[in-house]
Length: 308
Image (tube, rainbow, N blue to C red; front, top):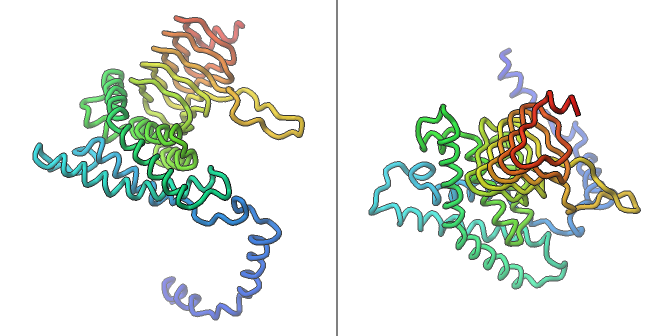
């Protein structure tokens, strides 16, 4: 008997022999009684990762139509394509924003108010897209000028995971600022899954930002990054410790991640922890473990750290 026939034979087994009624009943008790973890006990309308992936595809196509949209566009058709793509994409986004707001607004907020706020957030987000694209253009140019292996802007857009990560981050950061943190977090996680680069949507990142290679980069929630900063793979901008309150619960939202000033380069494998400041124009060498601030123009290497 072939393996395929064997699988087909097993599929014919009567499900009643598996005791599924008891399993389903047990799962219901766990879900609804003993371990009910649903937000506020009743919210079932969750944002959809699949819908947000479609939104990201549409927004990327609207921002860079011939690279992420259609290669046959010309001056006569490109604006129509962008407008049509945005109309479709923002309609999906508004519904996802509405679902995300259920986790942010007061429990008894009228549905009409939730929908109204979702529409306003979506409108303001759409209005910010030209500014987002302007900053992204500076990021792409920074990648092209900062990587001797780059042969064209198209290569940067189509092949660099750091570019994908920063496109998604700038979109997520805009939604976070506008009051849609859950959606922003989902977008950040989609970017992480696609690129291996983990940037919290609340992190503030200036223009002309370049992540070279990228895999394993982590940028924490309260990180502030200036202009013209370059990071290499496996760099961590993280927290040194996690303060707790009198009950032992983590204190959330405190400023616990680094400040990286303008024109800083941080090489592969470096770890910078805590609310420290990396001064303007500094270079942090590969595999350095840094938990103190450094002055502008510093050059920090492993050998220097061993001597401290």
